[in-house]
Image (tube, rainbow, N blue to C red):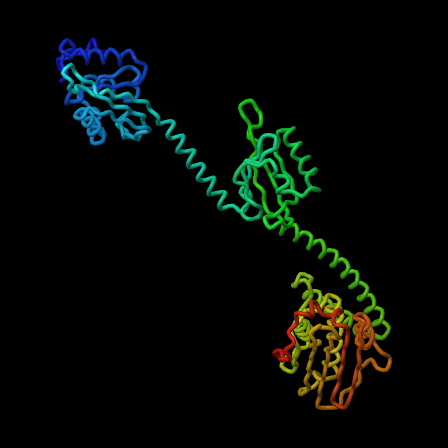
Length: 486
């Protein structure tokens, strides 16, 4: 192309008039396999070799022998100062991954990157007559490095945002390359070969190692839920999962894994299992109580409809206690909530006064005291304080106030009526209500009960060892302030 070029149309003129240094330089660049472009004279007329031509896209071949401004117009403001600097000073300019904005195909612009070295070509008189540009396009490398950097940034963001531990292991799992513990376990910022001693308990190592050996042998996913030593030294549980990173031949290069803190979930599962056993135990107890209700009620109910009504109401009372326990995850129930729940069906809340400290009853106490409250409420509605217009009920309870929190829990039910209180309807044969109040409840709580009747007054008192009734008595509020009316 250079030989056949019509050089009379070029500012550079025909090759016969070029200086010997310029002709020598052109011979060198044409023979080189490096990407070289030569910008000659004050117009920076472009001469380049076959290796350089693809880098300028469809500017080739029109750029050959023409001033650079004509074909590099889109980046001339960037390129011209570089070329002029070398031309006027003779100093070399070089850069790594230098960005240039260039239109290489169909006038579409793009940013490309080059390693560049711009050096002076001097004539015999020492003046700079051209700028020799040896370039190497690095666009692919720069973009790949950028994508890698962005990928690493996204990965780091994922690691920082995740609550899971992230780790890397050697191909044979002998060395932990890295671990980000997120405070659950201690971080490993540098490779360590003693990771088993640092993160596992001795008795758990064989099971973990067996799972590792299987994953390595099968080149498959490692997955195991196991104990781990937490950052504070305590035992926690983790669900660990790692995948092998393979080379082109299928050999394992390393393992990349994530591990979730499942300590709370394990504790929750264990708690659920305990609850299920407790529920199973309680249900069996409920069956026994219901059978007892049926037997004792049937002895004294000559009317089938009365029998059905009494059984239904007593089973519903058991259900109310059961509901309170379910709401509180079978951890017990508040004494005040229990009273309110069992007196709710009888209405007249404004005539019922509650007094006592806030406390939580044990499961057995919830069921038994609930039964007693139902029998007392039923009797009060039919024959006592709630059967008339002016009767009142006061339910109070107290606990020991000594520092040790020992002694007895006491519950008192008091009714006051405008007329003389009638005896419990099932007297003198001690029906089921009386049996519950004077035998079943106190016996179940290893305590005692008394029933006092006077004109216009009835009092039932239950006393039982505090530990049999109340959860964590040492934390109770000993104030005697009254609770709002039921």
